[in-house]
Length: 376
Ligand code: ATP
Ligand code: MG
Image 1: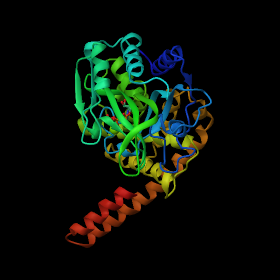
Image 2: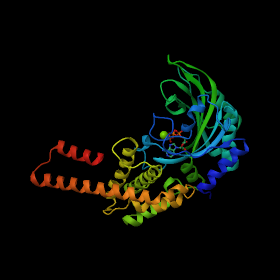
Image 3: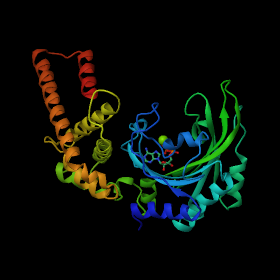
Image 4: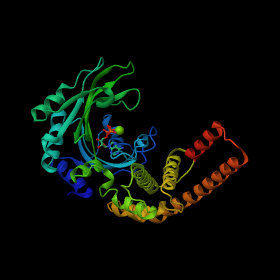
């Protein structure tokens, strides 16, 4: 058994002994990056330093970072993808390279987390017309006794550049029981304006390990939602809806989506964003409204989203600002839910009227209605 907090502290302690300095857990809203709405990975707040600016804490950094990936929203409902999750990471800003990075990863997995080598498999970049195969990484893995190595293309084992040009490179992903838990990215190249990959002036290492997936694995659970990062929220949804999490595939998925979306919403609210019709506020609004619509599938008719705030705050007691913002968070959820339920009810009334007044509803009307529901 290992708790979420214990995993985080083990990680930070391990990398501290390897002379890494600990970063703060940055807000979800990127400070100097207008290209993204939310922080999607631990490396995001480090962009200027990955590009060569000197970091005040030095060349070896580590930390845990809260992330939001709206791009994964379609996958939410499975066992391993969340909109909000925490990412552990260690970075080398032009300091150590592939050998040390892979050695550190394997040492942490096998010594500190006690995962046996036999259960670990990895993927490496297979090379293409533009960039050579990453034999360097695969040879390091083999030397360390990891022989389950797959080579994949750019879609799976390549990172960047973030824009059209800039740092990029191969990565090597670590899997345990078929689930990817950690990724070491090697920023080896720079893509230039002609689309050519040239050797980077500063070669960086950027790694990311998912907290939820790793604690599931370490506690022998094959579902992230059964870990302490979600279970109290799931229990609360069961209590409110009177439905059991494991009663059917559809209910399991529905409860997961509600838990995921409201957790993400709580963290977005915690970073001072409120529901609106544009950008971050719109993402927040969509998350809350989607959760409410899924709540309807469970038969929940009354306001419920704010009832999930307490279990969320309890899980994340290491984010004390959640507690100080609790009142505002609850207030915003209530406000948004009231507003949405009003719209929802009048939409349903309209639809009922339409059904009553006509013998048939055209495909177009039905389409418009379902779209309306989806975008509300
Ligand atoms: P996947 O292919 O499983 O979606 P990924 O390749 O998108 O993962 P990375 O971008 O390499 O993942 O992120 C680093 C680590 O963060 C992953 O190894 C995983 O442990 C974790 N992670 C990534 N996306 C999610 C998510 N949506 N929910 C939970 N953990 C995630
Ligand atoms: Mg992904």
